[in-house]
Image (cartoon, rainbow, N blue to C red; front, top):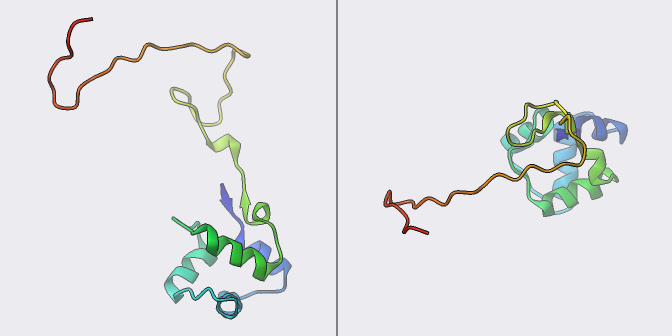
Length: 109
């Protein structure tokens, strides 16, 4: 996912992180300067859904305006990012072998 806060805020006429921080505080979401800087200039590591709701209310936007999917960056297990699987519709099942966490062997089947 791509975090698109700055462009969404700019489209609403908010050009500075401090402006957005004040507007969020007016709606009950008090964010520290450090966290606001991270939201404004980078990709947030974590964000509460309640906080995301307040950001959307303040900016008058939808979540899809703030979070843009990047499906080419995601990969399936055993597959490189951005590479599509050559087969269409076929699913290859792999046997799952249970293992104990304590290092002991499992009883015979």
